[in-house]
Image (tube, rainbow, N blue to C red; front, side, top):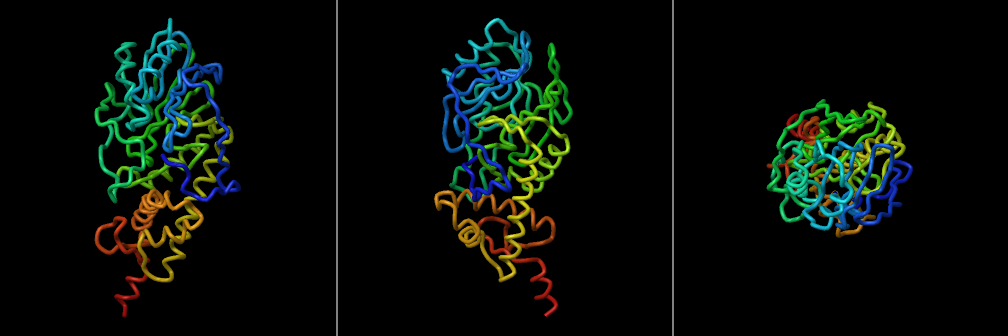
Length: 317
């Protein structure tokens, strides 16, 4: 993920960056949920990776986090006297999955997730994420609807592609809460970068989560979202508005993604424009799949894009 590449529009997405933590200290945040935050703050992780412990006695762990001895020691201390029955990973990025192997060795628990699609972001050199964990391989591949249970807790797997093709969220039935990884975050928009990221899938996943009417969302980074419907609908509206802006801009004729970024993100720091270009590429691919736009040659950042209707007019002429 990246710091928001979108103008901060609080009436649309009510961003919340009010979050503090004590690294390595276990924090009780609900009757069934504890969190330990890793000391890996940065542009992709905000204040760091939050590892969640679900239940008491026999517990599940969600997103063990980066390969960090200090964080492993903190988790061992938090889990002292307890049995880990499941290690869940939302997706295969380096800030989420690597420590799962050491935690497995310590606890004996199996790792539950989907294998990652290890591909470079289209357009090349800009690193938009913390990076892929190329060694990640779950012991158990889980699917949408998979249920795991422990004493007093039930976790349901939701496949939520968009940020990555294999991104998973986990619903805690007893508290009507969702551990949403990087799919939705309170502090920033989530990056959707082709080819592994897909805007159409992302919007469909957001609609699905919205329909579940969860009471609370717990992203892996940053604060909880206590008004999910407002936040998710705002995110959907924002993404749709971005596509409307693209269509309006292309009314004036063909354009490249970089040229469109310069106009649509004029108020955003230029250092974030390369990341915004990847986000806009996801939108362009989605618009093309819907028959709204088309690209000259390969559908990538270097292509020239136009409205599909313009091609039809040219053919008629």
